[in-house]
Length: 288
Image (tube, helix red, strand yellow):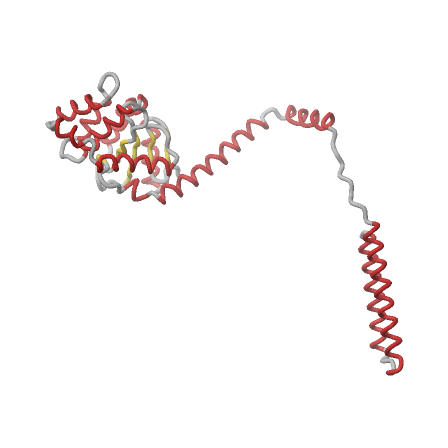
């Protein structure tokens, strides 16, 4: 108990005693003025004591630690457990991953209709499938090209899988032209997957000429397609992919969405299979 507290306690005790004496002894009317004066004097005395104690209080000094002493102590502690930094790194990665998952779940929920029910989107596999796999791709993306066989296998082996392809041309103007043709091909009854495979198996950079040639092989008119490439609906379809990508923080291709998880990069068919299986088992890409 510090000095100020002691003074306050003493003052309260004095005042309480004086008031108690006044009440219990029920002084005669002629002595009330004397009692009141005594109480006031005690209060003034207590006030002065408190003021004096407060003036005497000094701020506590903050101890400083010499870096020459502290730094070797920290170094010694870290060296005593070399795996501490590794554990800290893993803990940081786990924390950041959880934060990113939480952000992704919120963003996917907010953009749900645009992602899974967008107008004019390319749907492959089973339109009523119990699991939906979304892929953002660019026709000039080497990793997307390498991942095409994985998608083909998934479509062939899983009759309950729904696949949504999002034109996401980010690598070049040629990619944008090819994507515009792709949007138009998707509006027809032509086999879009054959068009998709043809562009990813083409040599060199995929551009407008490559895309129009692949469309012509499917029986479509390259002249008609080229005329429509500049239509507003085509631009809106691609812009929709850009808007979704911006909201979800997608900046590269391929990027997949399964359930409430955003998966950047070509992770391979086994990883995709496992996530699809988990979605069926527990409704999440990772089951506990």
